[in-house]
Every structure is written in structure tokens, then in C-alpha cells.
Image 1 (spheres, rainbow, N blue to C red):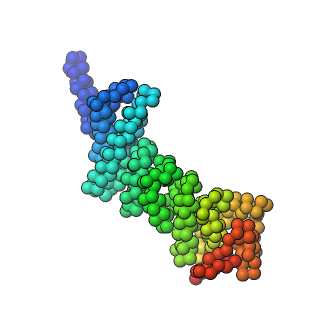
Image 2: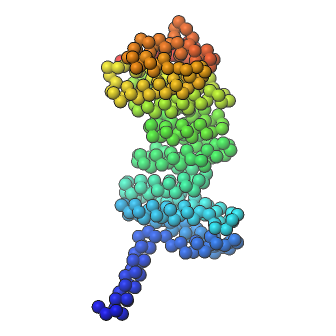
Image 3: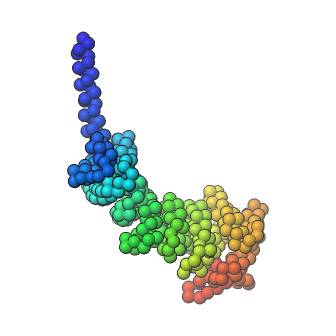
Length: 364
């Protein structure tokens, strides 16, 4: 091969690589970069923004099953160009977000026609993009997928509906916040530990009664699981109890209910550990120990304003009688009201009746 032929062959190869790269998912950024440098946008500029967003979203939709690198690069290209390079150029960002809302919402629906595995991958990546864009209208688009059969899809949909955009929606009493709160409360009743890890910190950042209601819903779901002996992943209750405890110093109509649910859930965790030793796995025992010890140290000690280690020490000694004696002292029994009910001014509910002691856990 002579020098001239080698040069031509090399040039052709580069062109082929470039063409193939475009076909395989490299979004053309030349037009959008030109628009990002403009201080005043015209109609063709706005069109260029929409075309860029549409192309990027379609690349995600068309991506092949194992083409993870291309999808990740497309996500990065799209997200990194959501704002103009010109300070205070608001028209660019507004147009970009409106286009993203339109095309992402459409792509989520179009993905239904794809094979299940590919459909799930597409939707997960669209939710990741939507979360990065932090757009309230994209939060509502995720509501339909909270109970999706695909766990990755439902998880990332939950990520989106517990994002900062969702917090802003609820705290500002946005008209769209009603369906969001309803969906989250429904989800919280049967939430997995992974979902709980997203919902509880989210609820703690809400400045409305919705935050308390959401934490109460989660606690009610966990309490019912203890009662039906179907509880699993007990370690998740550390976050539930912590979320309830955080409400004791907050102003809200459900403060008393938070105290009731806190005490009942903690009581069930202690009773499950003390009464069910023969049936619990080593991991379950360790998880329950962590719940009891951490809640005693971080919440009960703070409420009573004195060191509190009696529950932990009883567990360390393997003294279940001492454990239940301290349970009764703190939470109440037939003979005494209990430190926490006295301090937080609440009683327990037994049907329509009130009583001074927590409900007894049936471990049979």
C-alpha cells in the first residue's frame, strides 16, 4: 500500500467510525452548543433545543439491550446541557425543561411496546434523567410506575417522587401535590426496606402535615406486619422509629399519634425479641438488638434527658425478664402508665378503648 492509499484508507475509516458512532447513539451537540452561547434566542434556536432533547431521549429509547456505555453517555450529554452558558438566560432553560417533559413523558409510554427487560432499562434511565432535571411535572409522570412489576423501575420511580422537586411541590402546596401524597401513602403501607429508606428521609423534610401522615402510614404498615407475624427486614424499623421520634418536637395535628405509634412499634420489637428467641434467626436477633439499643440511646435517652442503657444491658446479659421489666417501666403495663406515656401525654388504643399498656404481641 503506497502512502497516498494509506492516507485515503485512514480518512475513510475515520468517517466510517464517526458515522457508526452517530448511528449507535452519539447525540450531535453542535447545534445546541451554538444556542447555549446566545444571549437572545429566536424561533430556530428554540427549535434546535427541542430537536436536541428529542434526539437524546430517542437514543435512550432505541438503545440496544447491552449498550450501557452509550446510554450513560447520552444521559450525561443531555443533563449537562440543560442550561445556557450565558448568565441569566432563562429562556433556554425553560424551553429545555418543557421539551424534556414532553419527550420523556412520551418515551415512558412508548417503552411499553418494548420487550420487558429492555422496557425496564429504558424507563430506569429516563427516571434518572428526570431526577437530575429536577422538574415538578416529571415527578407526576413517575406516579404511574411506583408499583411497576420491575423492581428497578419501581425503585427509580420512587427516587423521583421523593426527590427535591417533590419536596418543593408539597411544601408549596402545589395543585399536583395531592395525587403525590395519596400515591406515597398507598405505597408506604407495603413498602420494601429499600423504599422505606427513600420515603422516611423524604417525609422528614416536609413542612406540612403530610410529612407526619406519611410517617404514620409507614409505622401502621410495620405494626400490622408484626401483628400478623409477617414482618421481615426488621432493621428498617430503626429509620421508622427515628422518623417518629423526630416528630415529638414538631408542631402538627398528629403528634400524639406519632408517640403512640413509636411506643407500640418499639414494644413489638422488644416483645418479638424477648418472646420469640427459639424461632428467630441469628440475623433477625441481631437486627432487633440494633433496633432496641439504637432507639434507647438516640431517642429515649434524649426524651428522658438522662443516660439510658438498661434495655441494652439486659440483652447483653441474656436476661429476658429484666428486658421486659424495663419495657414495662418505659412503655407501660397493667400496673403502671410508663415513662414515655407520662412524658408525651398519650395512651394506647385497643379497639375503641384506651389503655396504659402496649398491645401484647402474639408470637405463636
